[in-house]
Length: 158
Image 1: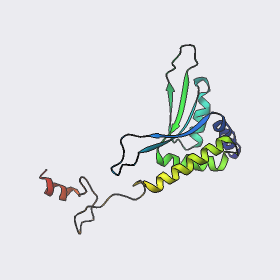
Image 2: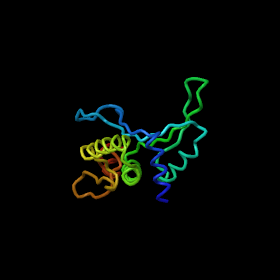
Image 3: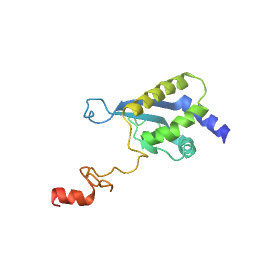
Image 4: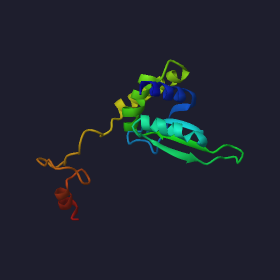
């Protein structure tokens, strides 16, 4: 299993990329929404390598065929992980353990540090459980507008 990890990490070092991009509209506070992406794009004939990588990473992300822009080019396939949970729980542990010292490792470490800083500044609700109704004394989960179902009905009349 460990040797497979190093082989796949070598493949990632050669073909993978780590980048971030603007995601949708800015936040209410004016800061930019950012999507962090781990991606590998290769010729479609080598799809099984991407499937092995996806399996090794616990089926995080997805594999998609890419339309080629020139009929003389080989068909392409892309493996991409861009969910924050997938990056935090699968991609980062994999790269920390198996990616050897290289220019790709340096690129990954800068990307990881930017991701961790973004997570610290913009935490998700993942793992915190449901939000609780804002009505004083009510501990039921929120259904809409910060209120539980019964308080929502009372407030809106619906």
